Image (cartoon, rainbow over all chains, first blue to last red; front, side, top):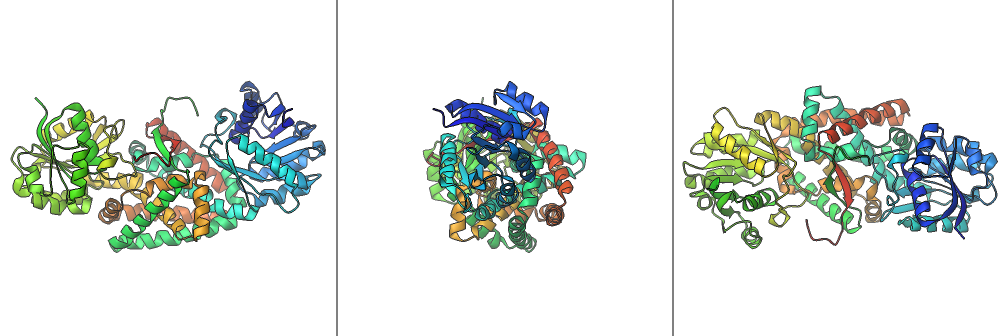
Length: 305
Length: 305
């Protein structure tokens, strides 16, 4: 017997689409249905074989489902939960893949018939591409997935979602939603904010300078553009919904940046050298944790992704 | 006949070592000699076959050479030029691979017997590893190399250095040292400065938080650590010797960052969404210019690089 009889994906972009591919590959669900506001997205999902059926009605999608995965931008999750509530059966386990957790828990739980069946989750994986066409089954391999159950959450429901992500190739960690938001503010939200800023600074340059920046981007700028090419709606929601933790880390970063600016202005070589030596040790920590990437040139003519 | 009879590499790390490998692979030099302050570096270079002979004396290294490549940190170039001057013959073409250009031109030219034979250069390529062991012959393939001849520079010398970099697989552009420094401040120096800062901010966290940051680095932070793992001495010299251009771009960046901080604090979702949409277009520009990379997980146990 398959672990799930019917899986409903609410939203079917990069993350949910990739998880649907994982269910297919390992035969983890008898039937897959996708819901999205946009008919075009559903047509793509059907064509790519990500689902067996598709609907724009979330309540219809979740009817009879024993697994429901919310994969919309974070700010939309509350309204989606309200819309699908009438269709949710007593056997359904509900999870999500959103990049912020406290806000989603706060917005989603009040609408669910049984909040103890909600297992909030966040697979720490992604690419700068979005939409169902960007989905691929190996996206989660060797990555980590964080589950943030709250006091009421049913431990058996947590166990089943944990097993699902392990099948996808991820190591699963449990923590509180608040701790998740604090750690991710550092590892993900602040880096995105800074990448968006520097790429925006370049977007304000004159056209002639901009084309030169493209030519010589390999000197470092190119890495920032990859991150700053990520989905605008999702990232707007992340910053608005993890505001305190992001502003706290941003404050620390700005202090450090101003100190470095001062060291450059006053020619304090030793300060620079000391910092650059300490950061090298952090790089080693990331490599040893198996979280480093090497770069490979991207073929501009290759199909995405 | 080979293009060069004797090539002298002053400094034999990632860049000069890789260029030495290019000369070997394509048979572009009859003989290769390396000079370095550190005997250990020279032993490695000999063992790796990067050179036929090695010396700690720059004047001895360049004696009889018709190609001299300066590959030390930028701040050391003036003193190195002075030290090697007694050995430079009338046939020698001198070039360098430094990441800043105006300062190097200013420091090196006064020491050369014939400054018209100096072709300042900068291959826009690299990895976060350094030293002779990090060198590989394909480092420059598909990349760009900038030459910054000054008014006096002999056009024939420029032509021969251009051909050399084309053999290495790079497209060669010519511009003034000042223009180079301005463009690279944007494409390379500012990105490095920002990456060093954010990784330094993390280095100041408590140990427990730090180990969690390592685990979840894949969410964006990991890309910054690669850049912030670059050679400390070289980057100290870059910031101290391209101070004005770096501070100017850093000023623009800081203004933009403060504006974004304000938008997050006041919940201005439209401002965020608009910016994140504009930055996506810049990513496309970089991909179309052939300067984008895709990420591949790095094996923590693999030998460097």
